Length: 247
Image (cartoon, one colour):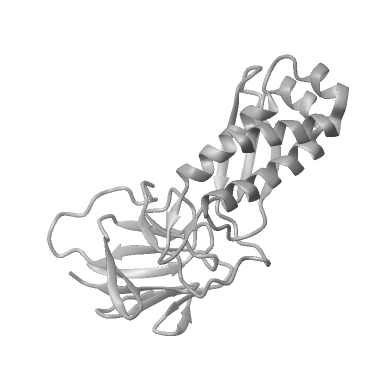
């Protein structure tokens, strides 16, 4: 892959002979580069006219590998960030903010092992596209966990361009909403926090609770911390609008 070859070429020119000596064994920088691109591809969220991908990457390394990387960490970090920008440009993906890469030590990992967490993290320089990224159903378990019985359950309807676009059943006692990939309803909006809000079932009714989000949660254009939902209420997170229906 041309991007990976260019990544290696730039890194080798930056750290010269140290590169060959330090990385004879253990985790190789190009392995991290490949994983970064895979995480971007696997973390795609489709908006109205854009495809958004993760821009924040945390690499967990074994103690021995982290010790080796610390000596060239700034150079590797800088090149991985550049790779994220180039990878997004080449594939037509969009980033919600400047790419960020950090390294941490995980003592449970053996030499040569690593793991990566990839997130969508908004930044002050996020692109202004004029569109609200789409919402998608997530695979997270939420904090409630128990499924509600079929029939009579509420739902959220994504509103785009004034029309219903997607429907998301409220099938648990607690349904989480936010930008984080393990939320029950993933809101891929730069204005959404990682875990933005929850909708809880209380005595047969649905209550939305803001989870201390950065930009707040609105219901019918009023900012709320907690509110019992009624048929037709419109929840706004960033630029994303979800209409509550009792079902």
